[in-house]
Image (cartoon, rainbow, N blue to C red):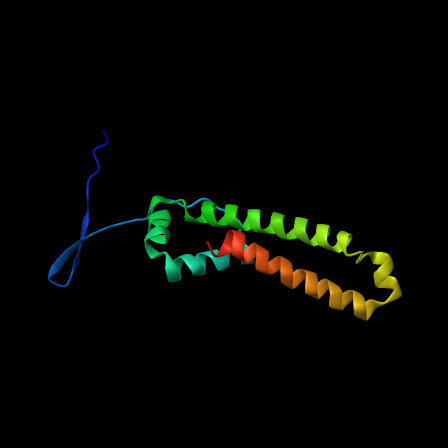
Length: 119
């Protein structure tokens, strides 16, 4: 069993404990991870603060971001192949290619949000 000493700081008439969060790992958090963080802060505060105080928040958000990016890329590739929105099609009709790719991207984003980000 670890014997930890609690230190206090004087704040006006009160002695407050000096609390520090555990060290967080250094991980990249992208757009999807930040969206999930905002979702947790808004709708699941207890879960957010449990992850934060245990030192696992950054790692958790990084993992969510990686899963979402992987699903996003996979679905984009699958749908563009299925709907024959290829580089050859892009060379033939750029405006139509952009329209179709934006449509695919919007649909994939809805799936990623529903399956990973907003759960």
